[in-house]
Image 1 (tube, rainbow, N blue to C red):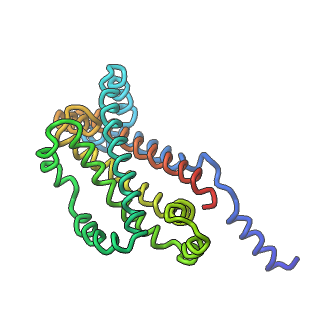
Image 2 (cartoon, rainbow, N blue to C red):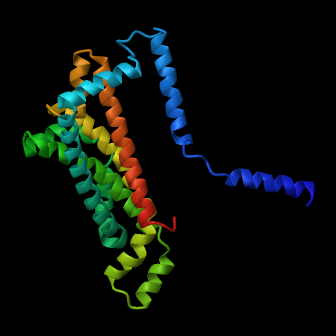
Length: 263
């Protein structure tokens, strides 16, 4: 084997080399160690940046008292309900707009005109419509999830190869079978991109809604301890939000691998 072929083979082997599992937590571990070191050296006042150990200590107190579980339960109920409603309706309407030329021509301009409106700005109006309670918070999350899922579903349907659709219709497939067996599988990668994008939007709207109009929830907890200037518990709430976002992302990634194994 020539020297050039050996070099190429070594480069290909390097590119194909598997990344060890611990690499995914290496960056976080280094960041936490650096953070703890800075705090131990008193380079930053604890009020502005408490040490991770102090945050975990106060977080344990919140868990032991049961307060944290009340906040987490309230937040999970809102975000799961709002996300499920917004994603389901977004996928259904996105499929309809992508499949029907009449629906596309009539309703797509409406969707794109409403989409840029900051959804949290509509919360006072939604509270006026639905009253004070859980429904406005679930509704604002559903609204925020609806648009990115709808737009990505619509784009995914439009990107499906038209030759496959025409072939299915030519062989006598009904509209329902064309959607179920041709359009939906072809659009799934783009749909999941929208679902992942919507997960971040849902978390953002959850915190915003809880800070404005809630007694319980992670957002309400963060605001409460921020007003009291108890930075450790505030930061623990932020860490819980980060963990929720990570769990949502990993859950969607797992579901994507199950539903789209060819990807």
